[in-house]
Image 1 (cartoon, one colour):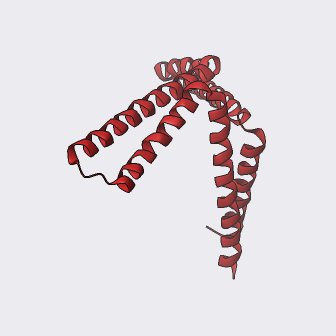
Image 2 (tube, helix red, strand yellow):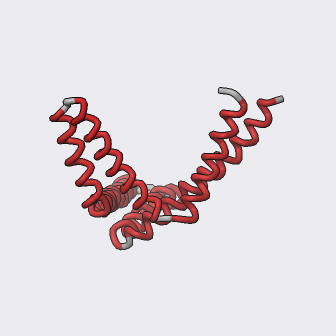
Image 3 (cartoon, helix red, strand yellow):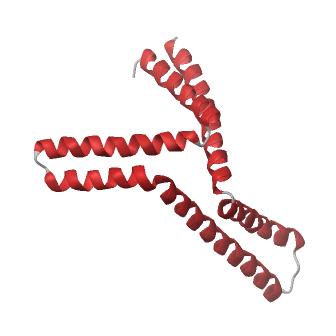
Length: 162
């Protein structure tokens, strides 16, 4: 890729990261809308080309994304929260059972073995009870990562230019 292409890509990454941080959860709504509309446009193209089955499937998927996109996202976050909660509780139980069976009390190892599940329990409760805030924080973190990536890509574009 040419330096100009690297620079354009870096600036677009930086701009996308800034949009993620500024718009937060609205980014998800925009993505859901764009995905639904794109599926419907692709469906129309398929129908014009004569691919009836593919066109009908894409129309149905596009309509579903537009109509119940947020509901599907909420369900996915709820399921993810429950899975993380079950996993974290099982890890707490596994660690306690290992400590009881071993009879050698290694306090530091036990504490370290319980930190990850404790964080998992907190994160899962966050996902289960406040999915909107979880979405916003996820988008903000993704935005910050994109901004960092964009800045480093701009630096790389100028370094490779020389």
